[in-house]
Length: 559
Image (tube, rainbow, N blue to C red; front, side, top):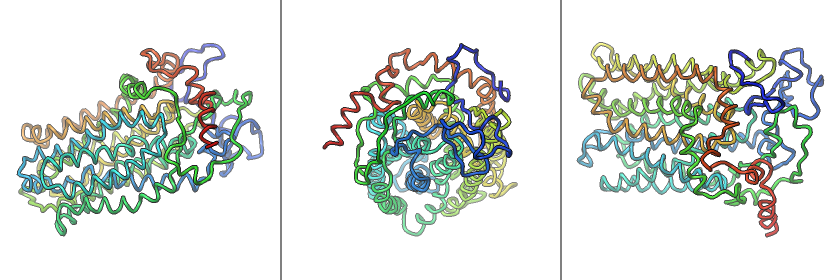
């Protein structure tokens, strides 16, 4: 038992639990460990710091393995994807400061306008099931390119829409365009970095997806007031179009079928041998839309896998930890206009947009805290655990999420319900605290699932996407009804109480997470329902695609 994490029962030699890894050199990591000291020659280390760190996962000897690419190149890919993700994420709250303007323009109720965001989220969710199968079979590069082009086209459509129905369909297609970035960016980042490098990069990726969007209403309110409501959509299209060449040229495929020995305990890896490519693929080869099939499984089978994983305990925890907090944030965005646009504050749309400045600062603060803390805490906790890293160490980050997020929700309800007494500052301040908690929850759940269940990462993030978007859709449907029925104060007291319960679920997840990993490894629910990866397929996915895939790749390279 390490740091109160309950160990599963020993089962002889086959007792390695996936996700558990040794990252210290010669035992616990401490300052006395020398770079040239007792290092295992069969393992690869990060020697850039004062203390050597075992690389987890272990890179192969293949130059096409993303873990072997130069760090600057991996960071460039992450940077480009984060930039496009920011543009994609802006489309979620782009209507927030102008709810009543759109209601007047289209002659619809505020609920109908809120549902324009709700159906946008549905577009993201439905597309997730389709894109996960495509990503599993063909990789992710073609989906990033498709998503970028769709962002441009659907944003132009949104600006040109002259009726509510046309605008609604534009919003749905915008959701489809957003899907590759919400679903796959975290996975791509997870494929390119080792555990000790991942925290800050994952934090930046999640900030781009969930935090950066809250600067949008600040800018959109001003643009709408000066140029009209169409121009925010045109500007999204223009800036995304400027980024399209970068995606084409510098975002190659990162899916890599790492040899099967990399899933074994590190101590056993020296006994494995594998054949690897002698040189890296050329720049032109890396620019191809597809780089061969990544799996031989049928698309239908891959389409159904995320649905089954909705019952996975860790996936359920991740959906609640990330998705519920994001849902509350969407609901605040829906009700914010009614708080600030009407007396006693009587803000304009532009001034209401400025209220999202606090949300952006909160998300940025959450990123600034969680990114460095995630990497530091992983290494520190592994150090005091005799060099053994457990994915459950990531769950300590739920503590600051619970403090900031729950406090922000409670106090937003109290202050927003009485703006005569509290004014505009305190609701905005507690909205910022709530955004800090949301950012922390998104980063924590992403890190844990990538570390603990890397083999089903695409499916787990699809589950998170489905829950987050359909839960948020339900909240946009009911937000105004609940607000009118119970009032702002009581509504957010109920909401904050639910969030406390959700955060409390991390306690059993921490204590029993390793047992869960062991049980789900030995009793794979996907295999139980006929959606597992068979032995031949397992080899193709983990060891290089097997004989059939080798033939496919040889034919492609010959051509």
